[in-house]
Image 1 (cartoon, rainbow over the protein chains, first blue to last red):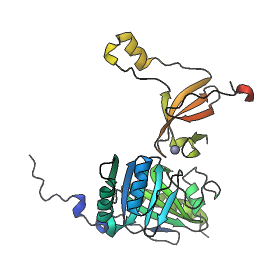
Image 2: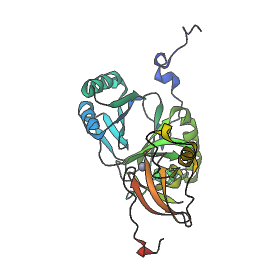
Image 3: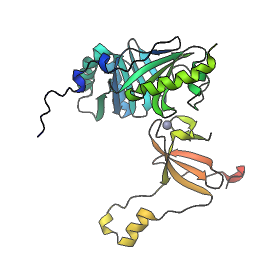
Image 4: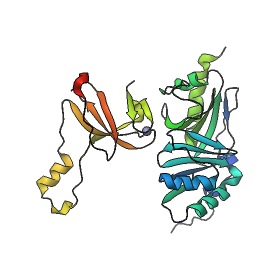
Length: 191
Length: 98
Ligand SMILES: [Zn+2]
């Protein structure tokens, strides 16, 4: 059997070391590392989890609920993405396992699977629409709406946190691709 | 771009969806009891409808759910969508869709 000692696992790498370098600009900013959990369960179990997590998950499709430093994003009838402070990762996990006990559920720490970007400003929706056919008008995609979708070739989670601010969760290895793509599109709006 | 109505998420661009073949094909409860012709019919024989076709779709780049749709294969018009497990809806043909 191969000697695996000395090979660092994900846990031994600091987030700073593996986080892609995204240059902050006035309309595109990398967001701080945070804890992320993929939670899958039946609706009544999701409600139990919400009580332990401190955020009652949305029953309405494609809506995010924010409570303090935490958020629960509806991704599917049986799937929520939970966001919290990076320092709370262990306690969130422990609290949820304790609250859910023997219920049927899946809780996976995906903190390092994806990174977060924030795109803001009066052209934010237009820039996103350069690579996404979603209707991002406020009527069709109001503040608080979130969804998994495609941004050109990248799977992302798009969440409108304010009128002209979008939070994007993107697979770590696609971060450079997404920021590069958005930057090219944004040139259209340079004055 | 063609919009497809996800029963969970609402109207979304076609590129978020994956086609899942003919709907309402029940897997035999005891495959071992089937002869080769019956098994082949279950695996391979599909209707190839010209007109209204009941078919599975999956919102693969969205909520990830499978659902069923009635689509007119001659016009690519989606006539109805419904959740997996629900019965095929009756169509009101007065609107001109066959
Ligand atoms: Zn959907």
